[in-house]
Length: 365
Ligand code: NAD
View 1 (cartoon, rainbow, N blue to C red):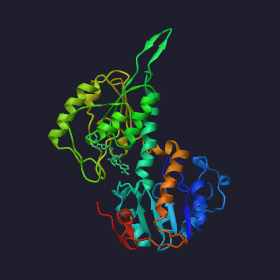
View 2: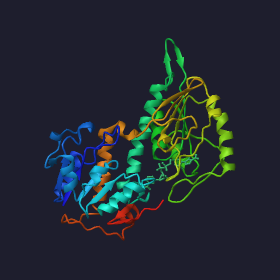
View 3: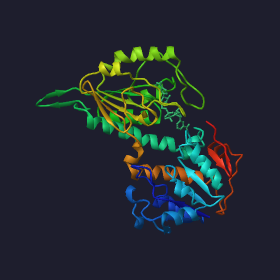
View 4: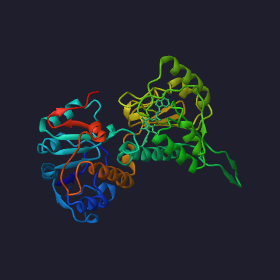
């Protein structure tokens, strides 16, 4: 069995799907590990840092792969080079990607989109959404701190005392909780809010205050559901007042497969302090703030609104280490101890993440 990874081709992508550490693990399982030259360069894993690996060019690697691992979906050219019965494993962004899924089915490439894994205890070690969201949440705070005209910590100096910044994080999923922890480590006064009531304790355990907005909306699978119009209005009313005193706002609210909920309106931004900063981690799926422009920084009445994209690629060495370990755990479901491909499709982890099986597209939005 040949397990392989290409140099990622998505714009700005710097992560790699196989690291020196996981390459060794695969080799120990009797797999042949094949990488495109320079695959790990931008994650600070030069070719020389890998051992027991074979190297090739993109077309040769894609054609030889029995299991191709990818951080983000590979190019159409790479997909069209894969052999039938090969497997593609990675963050395949299956929503709104019917053409790509059809191309995979046409090649009879069985594809697993790991963002479809259930959020269960057993799937945790393979959960790329979680591992990469932690990177994004951390980075969001660094961006906010860098963009802010104020300090985050309290400082007591001969030139007087500086008050700590007030940081609010909306959406206390994996990214939001990491953002709260990071902002607190920087010395800010932190508050968190989520529509899932079970997040209250998680927010408080990080030393943050839970903001009470009187809206509760747990959905299925541990995710939030969409709010009704009335709930949204209530949330916005309460939030408007609160935002007047916030120095940095990090928004991370998402509902799987849907456009991000619009939580922060232009009017709410207009009521914020001059110099306040918003980092909208939901920019990729449309943004939690009405003024967010994906990939850009917008200035509005003295408030900066950042809509960064693909944040996990911003710390590619550690993000790669984490996602590569997620992949290695998933591959254990595909390859048995003797190094033979033996996926058990009755396993719910495979069944739920499989978006294309042979010639059949299984994922329906
Ligand atoms: P996500 O990226 O889907 O959403 C981010 C957060 O936004 C969520 O906490 C969600 O409740 C919140 N949100 C949605 N609409 C909102 C609104 N209108 N206002 C405010 N907040 C809103 O979430 P995620 O980080 O992927 O986590 C999803 C769930 O999976 C969480 O319950 C998380 O704890 C759980 N999880 C479980 C495991 C496990 O192994 N058991 C692992 C990882 C995550």
